[in-house]
Image 1 (cartoon, one colour):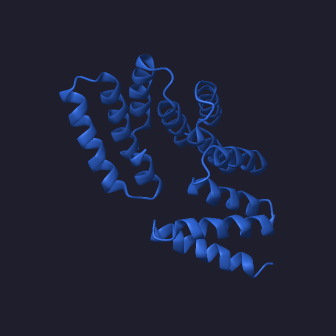
Image 2 (tube, helix red, strand yellow):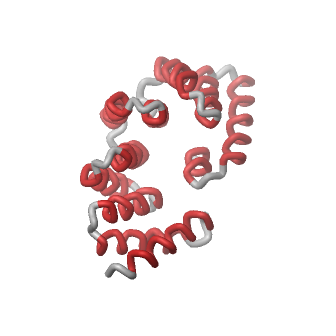
Image 3 (cartoon, one colour):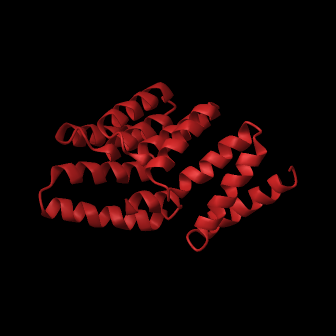
Length: 187
């Protein structure tokens, strides 16, 4: 979970350090699942998505119910432009872990990327229903509302995001402030 947060908030060097430590522990303890999982994470950060998928599949063979594996595999497919496979992978993960705000959020992210903003909003709402503190979902939902020209809801959710972001990530905080300022001029 910490690794996911590091990546979400652009702390890539911190994420790489975590991965190296986790790989060392996985090797020491002979834990193949974590070895495969963290090798995949290393390849994801290096943008070697085909290799990452190979190791994510090995990890899934050991534990077919792990939500993080489905999530990361779907994101790799998305980064490779294989959007249908990505959506299918999110759906398989959601069937295994119905209470995963992570899977709903990232499925919403993909819908947003594909211009399917109303479907994205539904995913972000579900993610927030499962985890009310998921900042990424608040921000992304605001973004989706803005893209469908629902300026009032976009403003409302960017405002909520700004409050929760304070002190957590200055890059995202400032970006959200700029977007709020722009929207305020349209209201």
